[in-house]
Length: 112
Image 1 (spheres, rainbow, N blue to C red):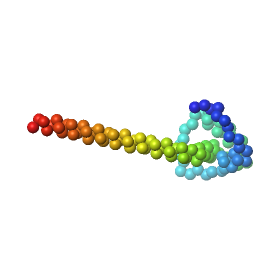
Image 2: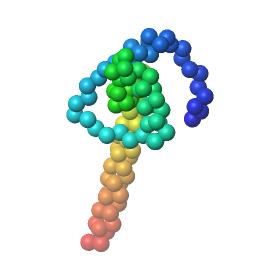
Image 3: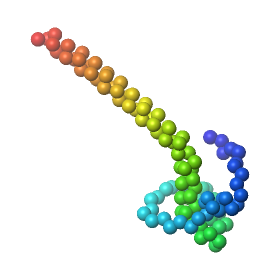
Image 4: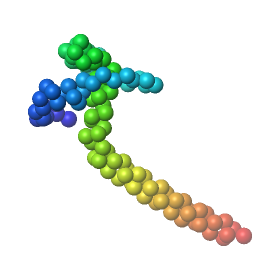
């Protein structure tokens, strides 16, 4: 995956509105990032910390939330396709098992 994708142009006001809102995060869960990504998040946080009370956690939460919102339809479609494939695979396995079970039954019937 190329990291040189064309950047969508937004104003600093749009950036602040989207990513720099104070957010109290309760019921926390850990998400691990590389040390490099953590340093980048900390540097961005420092830019807005005093004027927007931004924390590294709230910035990361906003970035992830925006990603999920942006790609919700794509992710839902992919999920449905994967479920369909799984269902078809399970159906084929059941049919194979039924076929194999009937062959075993025929084998045992011949011995009588």
